[in-house]
Amino acid sequence: MRLYNTLTRRVEELRPREPGRVAMYVCGPTVQGAPHLGHARPALVPDVLRRYLQWRGWDVLHVRNVTDVDDKIIARAEAEGRHPAAVAEEYTRVYDEQMARLGVLPPHIAPRATGHIIEMIALITRLVELGSAYEVGGDVFFRVRSFPRYGRLSGRDVDELRAGERVEPDERKADPLDFALWKAAKPGEPSWPSPWGPGRPGWHVECSAMAAKYLGEGFDVHGGGQDLVFPHHENEIAQSEAATGRPFARHWLHNALLSMSGAKMSKSVGNIVALGEALDRWGPNVLRQLYLSAHYRSPLDLHPGRLAEASAAVGRWEAYVRAAEGLDARSDPSLRAGAVEAFTAAMDDDLGTPRAHAVLFELVTAGHEHLQAGREPQAAAARDTFLELAGVLGYAFGAASDGARVGPLVAELLRLREDARARRDFTTADSIRDRLSEAGVVVEDTPAGPRWHVG
RNA sequence: GGCCGGGUAGCCAAGUGGUAAGGCAAGGGCCUGCAAAGCCCCUACGCGCGGGUUCGAUUCCCGCCCCGGCCUCCA
Image 1 (cartoon, rainbow, N blue to C red):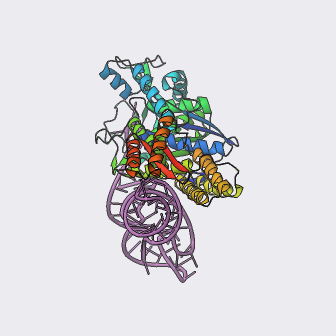
Image 2: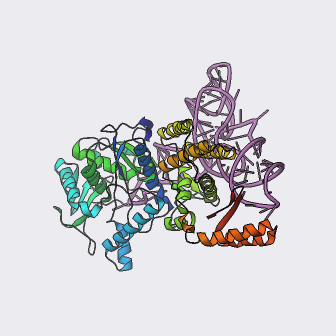
Image 3: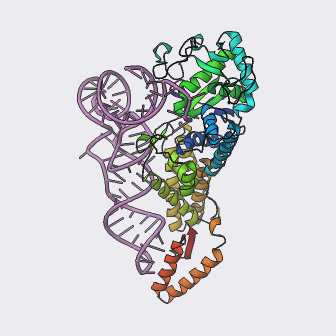
């Protein structure tokens, strides 16, 4: 398995600390509101990596944190007259629920920042002892220039950073580059006791503390959105490595961002699409197809028509699964072997999901050809291989349970329609089909009789 | 200004030092009572622009242009 490593700017072999066992930490949500389409990509990319590695027989330990204390959560709580923890709790649930709908496997551990204040205080204390951090009036800052490798991940030179250019720096900092590890409590804000007085943690320190707690030093993969490379991940490295003297994470995985018709997705532009609404409208497979149709390191631009394309693609897949339903599974092993080889080659090469999609399309085309030629074992093998590989990417093709309750009714109507067709009463036959279509039931005539599905 | 991505057909998107996967859309055909689904055919003399290296470059090198991101606790 080869993966691009932001740290080295190269595609490198993924060599886990323990052979066959990958420890992965991914930056999760700040639970300040409902997730939007942009939040889905950094959840889906690690999900696909994890599913693929597991399919290849590796063990994966997946940790994704929840940032449940932060300025925006506090601001929202204040505006709504609620306790910040209530806001965080609500949106943690919303996030988990929507990730489940998207088909993202839940992480094995989902630590919350507020549950790890003690670990963070211990880390900060250590940094203060070592001289890497200093306290000023209840705040504690990390001394960036004390960490020689600062800037390595993001390719920045400390002397060229324009800290303070866009935002007035806190004048108590010894250096404008320094960042907060601990923030003294302000009235009305949540706070915890600490050696520096009541306060709350800075953002970056939670990931350092929680990754260390659950994955230890030098774990394998650390992931997140590209926008987190600087300063968040740079700061995580500085804090962690300054404290331990050891490498923090071996492989840094960053997904490119999403744009909407060429524009950044942001509240001020007003082009945010809520993940929940997109799921309602398109369903998990279509969204997943959309995200995986581009390589994870390429920017993904959404515009009208893009979702429709993904929907058409998934529709083609679903149509084959339906067409090959019920075929005996006496398989043609050569068919699976070839597809698996192409699929594996694509995925091993830095998670080449677009090429993996091509393998799926080719399986579907081959399957239809076999089906049309009456070669059922091969058609069944194409279906089974398709379902297996699509499953590795997280696609789910369940039975059409939606229609179960109306099945007998539809069957009766189709029987009436067949009678009409036998009489060449096409007006009645088409009327029945049209009415079913209006109700969401698609009818397709085949040599073996009519088939129907919801959709 | 610095750093990081990206610029391949109408749209999306792989890929390679030797002549461009796959999908969507469009067009033609087959099948069908008509559809739907499916199958077949068709679609980039060209891979942002200009140089260079080479027998040969879209793929390597140099310069430039355009788009996006980060440089502020944005996924």
